Image (tube, rainbow, N blue to C red):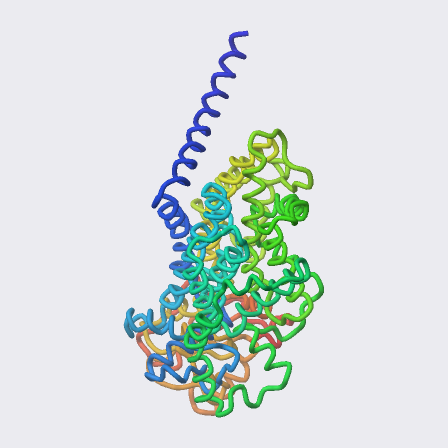
Amino acid sequence: MQPAVGGDAVHEGRRGGWDALLDAFARIAQGRVAPYVALLALTLFVYLPGVVRLPAVDRTEIVFADTTREMVERGAWLDPRYGNTIHQFRPIGTFWAQGITAAVAGPERARDISVYRWPSLVAVVLAVLAVFWLSAPRVGRPTALIAAGLFAVAPLVVLVSQLAIADGLALLPATVAMLALMRLYDPADRQDDLRIALLFWAAMGTGMLVNALHTPILVGVTLLALFTFDRDLTWLRRTRPLVCVPIALVLAMPWLVVRVMQDGVPFSGMGWHAFLAALGGAQDMKLRAFPGTFTAAALLGFLPGVALLPAALKSLWSSCAERLPRFLLAWVIGYLVYLELLSSKPGTYTVQVMYPAFALAVAMLVMQRRGEGGPPKWSLIPWPPVAAVFALALFGAVYGFAREWPSLTAILLIAAVAALFAWSAKFGRDGDLTAWALAGIGALALFAITLLGVVFPGVQAIWPARVIAAAASATCAPGPVAVLGFREPSAAFVLGQPKAAYVPDTMPAGPDMVHVVESRWLDRYLASQAAQGRVPVQLGCIDAFNTMRGCPLTFTVLAGDPQARTCTPVANLACSLTKTQVRPSSRGCD
């Protein structure tokens, strides 16, 4: 019997340690300042590694950052453009926010992508704090704190905190507007009516400044869903529209002023479909998404909360006679229907504005079931070993795709993430949902840090611009680089290439010039150089992968001047037959 007693003592010790952590959580939740400090620490801990270490992500992020860089460089704060291209569907607010951080950082950091990510990081951090601040009077401080934590670590929320795009900034006004509207919708909530109304309309105006009509659309479809439930919108008088709407219009006005300056007539030259797409926000997809795309993105991007989301939504539906559950349902249903039927925006950048509603629904369920045994019906909490394998598979997919091996640091962190996934799942299966939520928040926090701060930055092949820059520096002294056969925006932002890509006959010459040529262009390049009486010296070869187009790339590094003494071949970049041959799968990949 003695071993059993000893085992029970160990179990009680572990349980007692966890109970102490839960008690600490309860004390933090009831503190006046402590919840904000805890959420600020969590968000900075999770978001900063990726913001600082993640290389520039091609296409949208780099177009935003390079447009801002050139705007600041030209001093043309009312005329952002990418080269000669004017993006009519990208409101001015995001460029201004990024331009302020770029101006503060100075011209020496003009090509540092992290500079342009700071506005997104700050906006998402403030959105997380807003979830607690605005929902706590309605749902209670412990519930609001869990909801804010679940919202903070959801992978798609983390994603927009990392990128220099409008959607990170837009998450803040959308979150504030919806939570303020939630407060105004409840007639029992009479705290600071005017202040909440002012906050609502200020968020509406700011949302239009940074992302067009994205926030008004979110509010509008929610109101439509609420009207379907209630057949009553008289409560909207609490928003004080006569007093507050002018505030929103003043905040949004620079968007239209810039459109007049750039277009003459705002949005002139755009077709009806393009115009409607432009009003919906700064992102656009060239192809319509398949039905269910946005629903799938919303679910997959809401870990760990998605494990209880079906049960939480069912609980809301059962309680929809009450105003709070009805509002949260209208928020989710209205916007999801809009996305599936009308939106032309990427699902990975649009569904985050539903996550405060998701998080509140899940947190309310967690707190309602305290003391009940077993997970709720409709729970998706997995068996702990399955949760661990799922985490390992996510990281394995990254390394398998890149055909690289993880570092020792990455291995240790990945193992810790898998253990936390399993630990959280065990709490959930045992019915301790508060412990499940806190452990899940910790698991997803470490997952984000590991993936975006260690794994992705440590993988080489998926960052062609960085690979090219490193190879050029390794073979030659720092100097100008000309790239042929890689036309992604990172070539312009990271390497300083012109927006109009080089062709063989326009490759610049010079004693310190390094030429980097993709294999499909190599024969034409050599023929052009020979016709000009030049014989470039081969210095090495590199492989990379264009993730935007899904194509492998092979580059040859050459010294444009055979007499250049600053360039020497590097052994680990030695060319082989496989590195210089043209790959069939790479055709059309630049």
